[in-house]
Image (cartoon, rainbow, N blue to C red; front, side, top):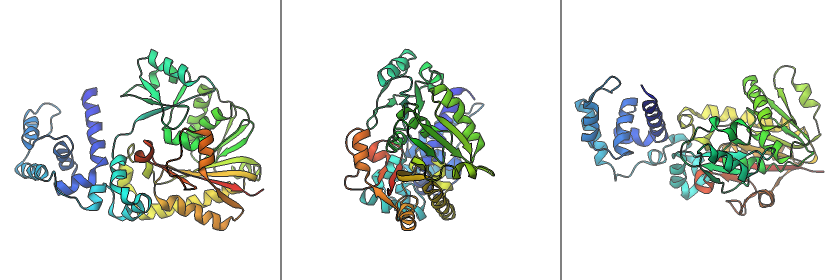
Length: 393
């Protein structure tokens, strides 16, 4: 199959995964072929005859023609266009997760879930170590890439349409990094300053460490930890491309704990971007919605508690622990922070609003709330949670 066909197949698979519950309900069938066929009618507005005609064409890569049962199924799907759906099907979420989603979104549940089932944009972060937004925009334009300033963050750019960013000079030269604007906002709320000692406890491939290095003007020290050597290995060339020299990487494995112990009570900022369900990134990874189980969510909660306890030991008196997830589920967010505060009364929840006002545009999307939940509907970003916990002096 050619490149255009592969793109079409990928787009179809993702479209089905984003709205799988809805399609399974109207098709009364969960097989991949039935879901794909139903998506043509339900999502793209094809008539059943148009689907049948397209499949009649055959061809080397053509799908099989419709059988009698499939024709009847598509006729039923077409007739149900105005039919009210059960709540889980309308929300395109697993039944068992609905109480969690309602706890966060309330009456806005359906609008929020529709936004989480949409296509995600492509956002870039301008690397202040090498360029300002205007220079980055000019470099992108030279390669035919159109972008505009972000809505929340001063260093965010949103690309219009599809673009081969990794082939662009602005990316190769380290002027920009690919990073969702919500992730950028979360990093800005760490409020890292030049000269700070910062720990990124779950650094992964280093997106937030790189953002923090830019905020710190590459002055100070960032200790990036992760338990995956492959992810950490990707950080080193990224840091070199960005011109960030203040980042030291540490593998969290046997023998790595002394490096954490050596930082006890010293860090100005400790960031815990905790492993989570990824519920805030369902636009990008819709398959994770259907892979998640109650048991997995429980196991993640135990891990999140452990990571916060490890992180707390490294925060200096008066320093901050910033807990974040790419989830919108209260069990991974508010509930984890509440348990931590019960264990560690020397940490208080610091309101997000003052830091937001200093670092980002406009006002936080949830006035009066001390912590923060971003979402595609509220902020036109991936879903993120941020809580700033300050240790008493």
